[in-house]
Length: 450
Image (cartoon, rainbow, N blue to C red; front, side, top):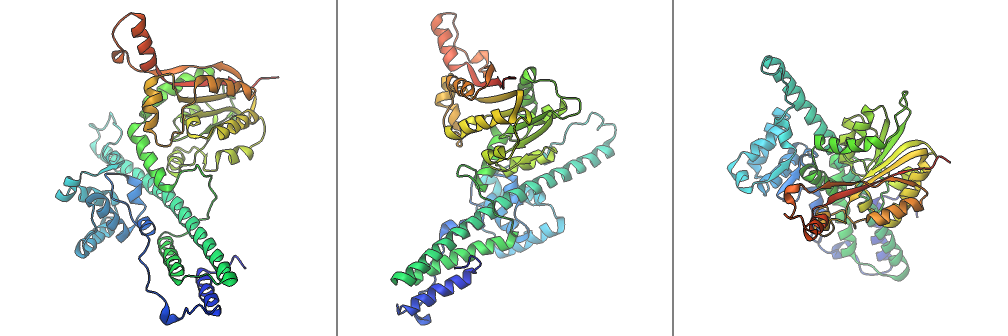
């Protein structure tokens, strides 16, 4: 059977085969359409929650934006007059932020107290010392900052939308496969159910309707552990809320510069950061004349890096590594990636890092420190994508097992002194060591020169 058969042709074949087998399936006997599966219909609109990432709302346009803004901020569908009025307002101002803020200012939204992460960025431009002396120029810069942010969020929303399209296409592919299987069963054994066929037809119609509103993009295969679009948006909001700010992170990351070789003057010293996130580490290295690139599965993280002009691949980590040449990188890094991976994948990844590094090149990995009991039993599980902690002993052995020479294993980010139990005795020292000690640790290892 040809793979180019259309959905409608496949549905017609199912009904025709059933008729050939004299199963009594005639047009007048076809059952009424069954209710749509809530799991499918929910994909067409935002679920009602207490918080959203701004790009989740930005991915919709025109009436669909207004409908989903009502669902998100007011937890209800708009009435006909409200939908028309707000849609006309959106078309007039061409500013989704203004519409969101106007809805949030209503009494109804104030009661709901929904949070939209990223909205405050539009009203907190960078401080310019000269602003009070040149107010007109400052206002122009504020407008430029606003437009730049708006474009950033638009690009992020397009990345999120593209990922959702791929998921929808994947769902349609699965339904088509099931229909082919049913057709074979009907042809061979006389099995069939018009109700099942009609349910599949409706599910496909819903998916096709969703796709028609946003266009299509090429479908890409993704590994089982790669994030979904919904999870990507959640994780971006989670990072923005709970991760340290850019300035604090740069101070922390600057501690690793002591281990790095000096970059070549011609900018040929290559660094790749696996699971690069928002790109703070790569941004710092670029300032030191390294040629930087990253790999990250989250399209929103990639969009953020692209805004910094940092090239980032969305390919599967191992597939990306397999495609690179031997001895091509000066540094391979992975900050807070190990705890997200199955150990077998981590083992393969470290082997690939060894192959990619030139002799004398460095591997840097940082991960939560389970020697700290608060981390091991509590804070590690704040992140729902964490699998299990990696102990310093295990990571040290695995690094040497792959052929590296361990240079250092720094323990990092202890709790502040004011969190410690008071006392100079051995018991207090032990309690503080186990509960208030370093929250992270890292391994810095070198590929031997020989």
